Image (cartoon, rainbow, N blue to C red; front, side, top):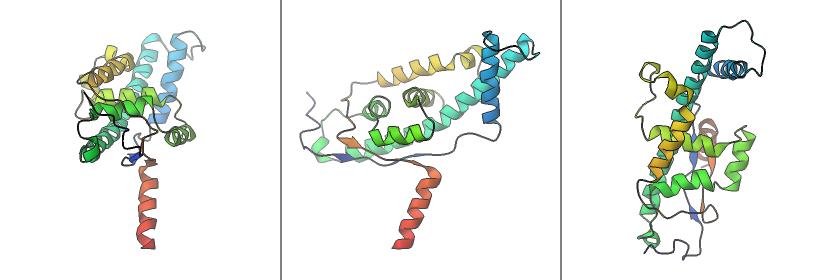
Length: 205
C-alpha cells in the first residue's frame, strides 16, 4: 500500500519547466491557411477559388506543422518529467510512495500550478491540457520528429485523436500515485527568459 505522499506536510519543489521555441518561419502562415481551409471545407467560409484537392493539401500541411510543433513541445515536457522523477526518486520521505513517471505527466495535464496556468494564458495558450497530453503522447511513439513521408493522410488529418489515445496508453503503463500542485510546485520559463535569468544571477555573484 503506497504511503501518504503528503505526510511530511511540506511543499516539494520540482525543477523548472523550460520550453524552447518550436516553430519555423513558415509555421504560423501554414497554420492560419490550414484553419481557413478547414472552415472552407466545412462551408463556414466562402471558397477562395480553391478546388477540393488544394484545400485538402493546405489542411494537411497545417496539421503536419501542428504534429511537429507538438512533438518538440513534448521533448521539453518529457525531459522535465525525467528530471522530476530523478529528483523525487532521491527523496527518502517519498520512497514507496507510488510516485512514478506518470505522476508528473498527470500533474502537468490535470493539475498545473496556478502560476503556470496564468503564464500559459498570457502566452496565448488556452487549452494547455490538450497540448501537453498530445505532446507527451506523440513522444511516447516517435523518437524524433516524424517526416511527412512516413505519416499517412488519415493520421495527420486526425492526429489529435491518435495523440490523445497515445497519452492515455502511456498513462496506463503502470499504476501511479497522483500528485497535486498544492504540494508539488514548479515554475515555467521560455528558454530565452530562463537564459537571461541565469545570466543575471551570474553577473550578481
